[in-house]
Image (cartoon, rainbow, N blue to C red):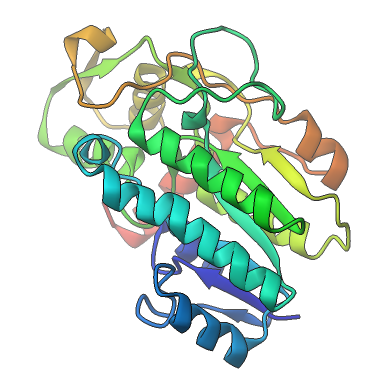
Length: 288
C-alpha cells in the first residue's frame, strides 16, 4: 500500500515519518516541496502518476493565523484551492484522502464540546479558508477523512511548547492568556491515529475530531510545560484583551472525540501524559 504525504516537511509530516519508522511501516512517500506543490496541478498529477498512491495525507496548510488577515488571497489559495486540487487528483487516481483541518472552523462562543456535525462559523481568515477547503473536498471526493485538530505541538518545527521552553530559559516572568480554552494535541499521537485509520481497513468516510483529552487554557498549558521541564519561571494569567492580535481566536474550542474513538477504536491520551513524552524527546534532542 502506497501512502503519499503532502506538506511532508512540516511538523505533522515529520511526525508521520518518525512514527512510521518506529512502527517499521513501509510504502510512505515524502516528496519535497517542489514535486509535492499542491498549487501546481500538473506537478501533482505527475507525482500521482509516478507514485500511484492508495492514500494521500494532506498536511500542507497556510497556518500563519494573524498574517492571514492581511494575506487573504494566498491563504485561500493554499487552504481552499490546494485542497480542491488534491481532491481532484485523488479522484482521478482513485486515492483516498486524509486531510487535516482545525478547530478554528468554529466560532467558539458556547461552552459545549464541539461535535463534527455542529455548525461551523469561523471568526478568522485562517478558519474560513480551512472550512472552504473542507467543503471543496466534501463536494469533490467521497473517499475522504477530514480530521480537525487543535493546538498542535511536538519535538519538531516551531510550536507553543518549544517557544515556552525557549522563553522560560531566557526570562524569569511570562504572561500567558488564560481565557481561551482548548485541547493540546501531540502531533506524534495524531500521526499514529492517522496511520491507524489508513491501516484499519474501514471506509467510514467523513469528518472526525482528534486532540488529546482534557480542556485547558494557554496559561494552564504553559504552567504544565514549566512544571514538567522543571523550568523556574513565574507565569501570570492575562485575558485575551491584554494581548490583542490581528485574528480572533475561538474562546472555547474543545472537541468531542467520541466518533473517532468509536469508529476506529482509538485510545486518546490525556494531554499532560503526552506533554511529558514530548518534553522528554525535546530534552534528548536538546532542541528548542
